[in-house]
Length: 261
Image (cartoon, rainbow, N blue to C red; front, side, top):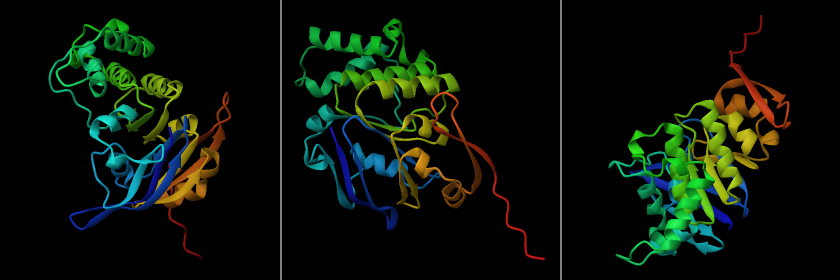
């Protein structure tokens, strides 16, 4: 299912956080938003998973206005892993994943065999079936992300939105989580902090600076030394990944130009 964001603008208490952001994500694409801290990445995503209503502009799923849909219908089409995804109570892993079935159930309806099978399949798919009876709060960061991805898969959406899904994970966990998402076959829109991970996994990158998109395209075309100096304030050296050929970056401080003698 396709996502289209058209002229999205967000103002809160007189401050314009995002201004006229327009982008599209094709069905099955893995698209990343990158930019400095505070650039507006999370604000865009919050509008896509309906935690925020844009001041101006629209978000469409499959051509339909997302904010005109019922909450239940929207949740059947789109699942999200926000940065602040926190489970306060110590539910079991099985109970957390079962929450993904709520958009498909009638109020106070009992869990069906189909629901249970869907949840078990989702846990197996992310390699976390053995965690089903564990308390969610006892898990490591990487295990929690696997479980939250399983919950999203149990929701059976067609679109997945993730806000910094690799935060607080070690390198192996970061690669595993993004591979799981990549292999899901869903349309994916994600904000990523690590530019090298973004370059490895994303089909398309949109660079956001001060609430506006300043560059869009394939990672190799977008992540140029000039853009990285202008937007991120670093000096970048590009090298090809030895196996995939994807652009990878080595960074130095951007030193001020010496005055002419």
